[in-house]
Length: 314
Length: 272
Image 1 (cartoon, each protein chain N blue to C red):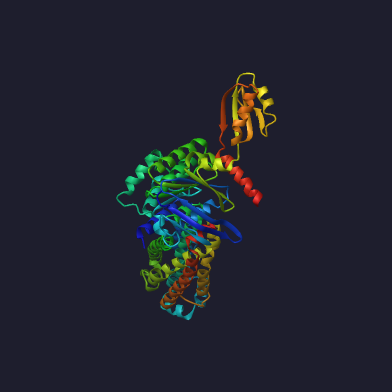
Image 2 (cartoon, rainbow over the protein chains, first blue to last red):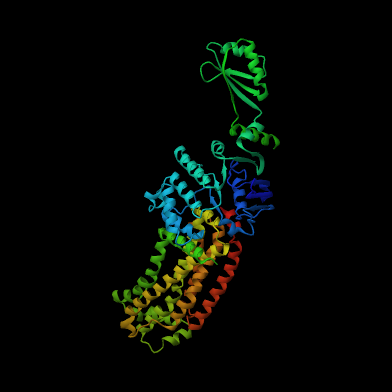
């Protein structure tokens, strides 16, 4: 495996008595789409600020792309692109001017600026409105423009802070497509989100933050397997067998209910290892089974399982 | 220093400022009122109303109050000409300083506080610019336009005043040494004073309007100068003008020192 491009050890940031980020230890590898999950106020935005050298850590340290954010801030920020939680665009200026100013700020070669701006306007479907003031744009257009600005200098590492918050589903889908296309170009993407569907769909690995602490780390699948203790299982049965199945399973330590589809029974609260026993029990009761579908826990299940754990620990 | 980045910050700030009527109107109206309307009113209105203009009794009383140094400058002139010189060269000189102060102050309010209010600062903080480049870009975007407006205002004022006073004095009043020192030495210092004081105000101000209102207090020293000259405590000699410029530069540097201490992205991001 390649060397990690984000490494943090004991990274901590306090604001007065509040610990926003608490001893963060994290590694992110080149080419990954890494999701950083957590509620509002969990410490995600503070982490991005610390990793880009715009906020000083109270303790611990970080190395991003081999650079120390606090001492090599300008050099580091030349290699990273950050999409802030609000688009942070100059709404009194046009999209073209917004992009060309940031191209200058990021040191894009003077001869390249016009070509790069035109290319991004086209790639993000903004060419027709390029000379309109950004204040006249929809939220989705603003977010696309902000994303275009984030990649204007072709950064190696992208930080996206809640990229689809407050967008309607259509705009969110467009932004997702653009993020994935950016990731396919070989960039590493670090996404802060509390949108679990987004994380599950887009991220190779996720870290879950809770009150400033990293409480889980892994692929969405790994987390689901390790943290969600129980699964739900849907049994598709021969017509008219549902009652018989529910009676047969009554003695088992599970919850049984009629499934959403006709002729199905949903068993929930079962451990994964109990699935063969459930099938045995139904077969013994002469229930004809057409199909057994374990419903894998989602990242959402994991997230809420972790959240309730953290609440208990508090 | 990365001057391309500094220029980009200036370009961004100035383009944004030019879209804000709350900033552009004072920048246009103030010089027009001070440099065109006021001298015309002072010189032409009394005559139009049928009074004896600058030679009225009230003016004679006022001239009697001015400092001996200033009175000596007006000796040998007939009363109307003395009145014209008194108003155009001396009385309105302190008011000239309002222009660089207010222009830099109002642009700085939009640049420093308006950017926070519009939530556009955060993206800027994530760029590879250093804190020094960011500060330089913002200072120059307020300071240079203030100088430009002051210079244009001075040219406008010289033309208006020379035309208005031509009959009374019989010679052009501008350019003259005092006003040249004002434009070259004091106005840049006054612009620096206007913007560095706004730097300090911007640390606490949440909105452009808050900053603008609080920042407007910087014209108080100018009003004190005006009053001081009217009651005969001071008069605008070349030496006083040079000294005034020096004082403003020193105060501005002190304010810059304190302002710079809070102008770090690590501090700025915490204010968002």
